[in-house]
Length: 116
Image 1 (spheres, rainbow, N blue to C red):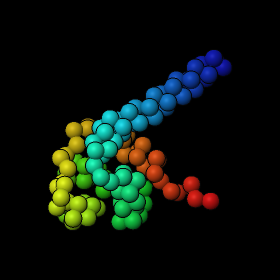
Image 2: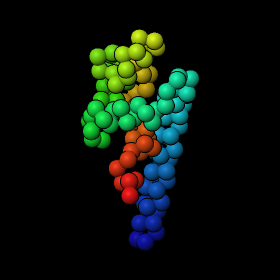
Image 3: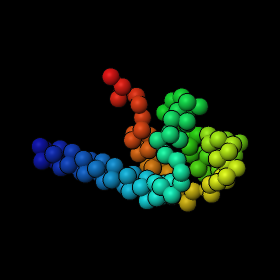
Image 4: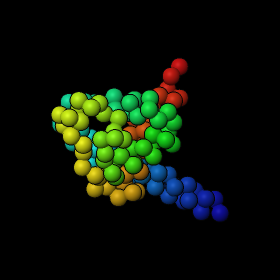
């Protein structure tokens, strides 16, 4: 019985670690790789979303909506930025990958629980 419980915890732990690693890989390969080429920081975009949408849930919903259906009317980027660089193409990530990347992004830049 103890071995079964230990094995279950081990599997859950390994699964969690693998999930975290996949989130980071997706974020770095599919998000950060393009954004590194642009003249702005994703941390700044995070705070723009946070100012506009306030909560974790609404920020994540807004990001999913924008990344699946980019539109200048719902973008948090300035009008000048959009005029110069345009609106991005829709993401190629599936829903699971997109949510994993957004979760990683949220955890990387969130301020909640970090301010002392």
